[in-house]
Image (cartoon, rainbow, N blue to C red; front, side):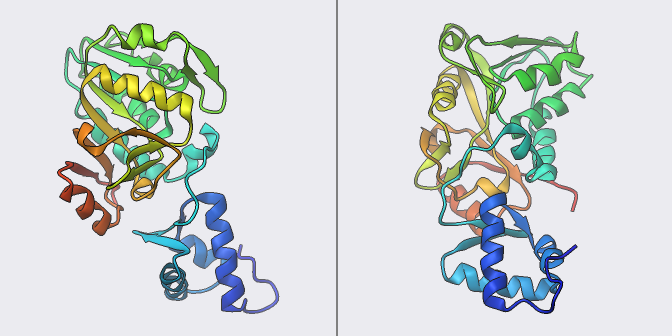
Length: 269
């Protein structure tokens, strides 16, 4: 149900409320704005265009994301809801890349957890070993025994992401040579590279990069063009970006112009 119970909301007020909702959610679809404020999608697009011209948000396919605020860390359960269909599409695309006999690393994150769930469905695989610092991913892969072997790194638990950070993780990552790593993040930018919202997990991501022959960043389209607190790596250190087909075409073109391979996972819409 919409928020308008007493008549049309003035455009200025409606746009302020749209920005407030974006700050809470990080990504909101056009259809959701229209339903919430009881206006047409044409009106919503006009509002979003006006707000983008003022530099207060960034339009992406199907909706909008904040422009001014840097990404903030949300609890795993909250982040998992956002862009769920996009993350599932990325998960399927990434899981399809794994081959028999592979040793891979699955980084912490809701998108990489989607990779884990898709990987658990790959009953055609044999002799695959997965290293992870995510308790959630380890649980998601538990049902894939015996065709997958899961190795969990040691460390201190971060309840917010159900992840393990230093000490101890380096004892594993300094001694393995994985074929590929699937890395989560909070931002992918042409100039600032791959970034993340918190420092402890950023250090683990850097270890994962050093321990892997191929590095695949898994990031839904709302992360493109965003810059978070901590620098993970430059784009030149990434072999492939796997995002979804709702990504802003201009952002995709700009990323490809850097030489980065960008794969758009089909969401089915």
